[in-house]
Amino acid sequence: MKKHIAVLEGDGIGPEIMAEALKVLEVVTRKYNHDITTEKAPFGASAYFEFGASFPEKTKEICDNADAIMKGPVGLAVEDMKKIPLEERPEKAAILPLRARYNTYANYRPVILPKELADFSPLRPEIIGEGLDILMIRELVGGIYFGDKVEGVHTDDTYSHDNCAYSRAEVEQIARIAFKEAMLHRKHLVNVHKANVLATSRFWNSIVDEVHKEFPEVTLDSVLVDNAAYQLVKNPTQFNGVMLLENMQGDIITDQAGGVLGSLGLMPSACVGKDKGYVEPAHGSAPDIAGKNIANPYSMIGSVALMFDKLFGCKKEANSIWAALFNVFAKGFRTQELAGKSTPKEKILSTTAFGDMVVEYIEQN
Image (tube, rainbow, N blue to C red; front, top):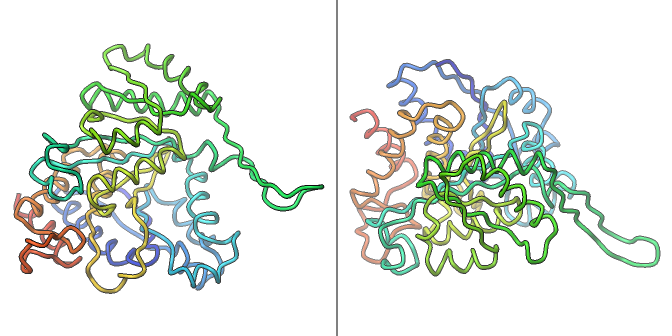
């Protein structure tokens, strides 16, 4: 396989965790005889301060010419972000344009916690039970985030509004992805919505029900988003399988899932379009710990696994990365934010040490 990958290190801890992901990419490339090249490009708040744009034109060109994109988290400390005009802040001028440019409508976020690692979670071990294995599928380029927005003074009043809109085609394509994934994950799909209030949710549900007819083997459950939030803490194993979420609701619920796991550092993701996609950790840039070599690179490395799987169709390579990640934890090692009071000091890994152990496992297995 020959591929060229654009690498957007991002801000804060982005360059540190990206370095570990690139080490893993290199060893997998070598072990499985692929021809994979990378090219770095500026992106995010740091790009704005250096080039005057959070998503510079040169970066767009590099991404356009790449087969896939590896993206780190973006954003700097609050005082630094205040120096960036609202229209140029990364969330508005970089993240959403990146999604729209490549129509990455399907966001994959695996929520995995084996029962052996139940101590990671703030929930009691009996609630984690036999472990969590949930694949959250979030629609990523529609809904309120991409709808028309009005903010400020208008005529005789001051008001704002954000328009939430979905087309049939948008719902059909994400629903079909979710059902296909459900066929591979316990044949169980939970559709999350707010149909008791929102017209868009009722529209969404009607189309999901139609697409379900194409996948009669899948058990389809339906749950209101507020109840889903409650149940995710009360009894998360009931969602083992696939969860389907619209854009804003998915943004919130997937982060809550990170809390259930015990860290957003355990939340990799892939954003997939018909022709191209990118992978990224679901967490932020944590500028308060940047440069300290203590950030957890799991999510960035796990995103490489998702790239091989969801973007390149290379499951063997993806599985080797997942096995390496969980082998590190199985040996009792922890990154700083996962360490408990009983974790021996010698078992707490730096960012680079974690990456080195993952690379070593892949090389030897």
